[in-house]
Image (tube, rainbow, N blue to C red; front, side):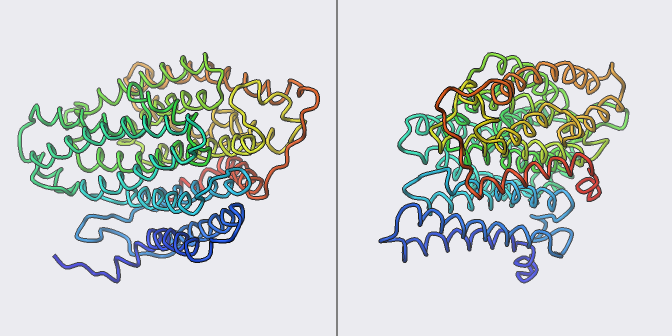
Length: 484
């Protein structure tokens, strides 16, 4: 096996920028941080982290060798490129809101962990090896476990980290066991080799066991029901920028790896029209996620927990995108994941600013937001309406593309068509609980004596960029879809 290391380093420039940036943040804080105020150290660490993310994002757009790399363990194709850029962009928007909104005694470590998590997720985007994919997934996940519990002053943060770690460890065990069964059945770790090995032998009951194990692992990462029980506590207890990364970048990277595994590793539909062996299990997860997420969100009085159950419902739509990806390609599902991630990051940035002003957990804490800060109220409205699927925001087009492909595949009586109709019906439920939040922010007046809110510069720029991208991708979807 011959590896061209120069070519490999050229292809992995985004990850190299992130790792170098994390080490630089830690090194400079250790060397020069003593004697400086915590606020100054936090600003310096965030600035270096933003520079590392910007450099990685620029490197991801630069020309790089296409095709297989590192003896077939990596593949730079449109799915990898768009997912990489999406993960880096979402992390950039989340980190930009940190200065002025998050007061932590160890800001350099926080930024370094965020960069390491992002590096893991960008690696997941292009891997075609089960081994490298699992290592990349755990690199991102372990960093997120630490980020979730980073705010030691809040007991909720410690509880969130503990639950996230315990659920994540169990899910990782299921995923690794499923990968080991796939390796045992096929004798290969790379996805093309797995496909060839499975095609050369009759169907085995162990293959169904392996598929179930893998779905448990990815169901946890996507917060799909019934593997979603960690999500409400993590969304509520984790620092807002960390929760934004959990809800957006982690889900996008997991979707890319899942699409690649199902599309080129596991058996697809049979020649006689027989569905793929994983279709039924994915459909069950999609239906459960849509029902559980939307129904549970109706009873939430906490904004963060509402966003968590909303994420469960959106995971159901993403799983519908997985079902139609064999016919429509990965473009619609990735477009939906990117636009969902943008709206979620924007909502958490608003909550991060409010946390810096004393906290905002319940709906009523948002009362009169339009008077206290028109920027926060407008950005929150744009993000929640995009999540609800209101035009001309990108969330509407993301749902439209997936539902249209699902109905086109076999009509309303088909499996995907029925799930699409269920998702359309439940969209009305979702619109209701989003409007409950917006009613507090845009209609109700503030309590007497409540001061106005000063939005930090980084958070303001992050919100403006997020809203601009939601509008631009809603009006010009080919900015992203043409790459597929």
